[in-house]
Length: 147
Length: 147
DNA sequence: GTGAGTGCAAAACGTTTGCATGAGC
DNA sequence: GCTCATGCAAACGTTTTGCACTCAC
Image (tube, rainbow over all chains, first blue to last red):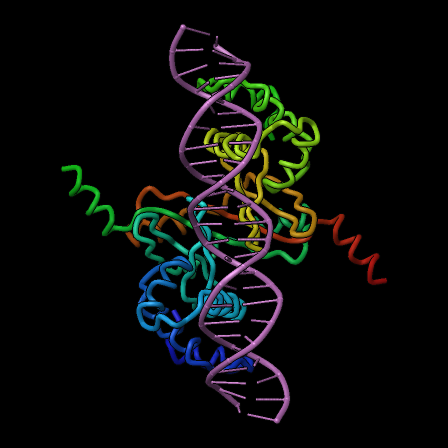
């Protein structure tokens, strides 16, 4: 997960302006320890500075996605959530209860799949592996509730 | 990809009523040879019977998803599309140009990943592998356009 | 006959836009 | 100072809802 400094330089290196709003949003991103929705981000940002416009936030989200500062993740529920990005090829392990994300560096996309893709004649492929489950902490909470 | 008959019995076996609208939608589903959006489906259905309400269509989509008659797929572009389901565990190879879908029966989720998931302490996991690329036919079309 | 399913229209939802204003480089 | 970026509010497109009506069982 990128640090504030890394995010700022990623933004800066693209020739984008380091406005107060963008920096505020980047700062807010750090307070999430897992995934978050656009709305959750909006609430946190508004708490810090109520004058930030919705449009600014969505424009920043798009920009950050494009620069790789953020990544978008599709939950089984159908909701899209965001996480702060990290470098290198990786996949995600997501807790469907609390939204916790763990980056997985192992990639199951090996020779077997590559061969199938080639056989089907597809080019310019990218792949997405998302594993969804319940994290240890949420398992404990759930057990506690039933017992 | 399920046949019309299979879809009808999947619906029927759940105790759901076989209404004219639902059957019309199931029939329409067969005409797609790849993925489709809710709107594309709506257009096709409306062409057959203009009196079908939007709400009915969305309610049917939800129902079909729940019964496994349809599957929802997340495109890299951010759009959600649907495909007619098929039985057994499988993943998808998607053409980002035309929406063509190929089911892949090989599953890369093996011991390696299983061990990582266990190590991280996650339970009740499900996984999603989506490969996006450009199919053979669309590659040819693109080449033709440039040359 | 009964209740699941429907059509309609209006509302809700999250997101995007147009434009005048304001701030970064 | 020149442009990119912003705030506001209104528009947008998709999906959901509430309700009276209807049709499958």
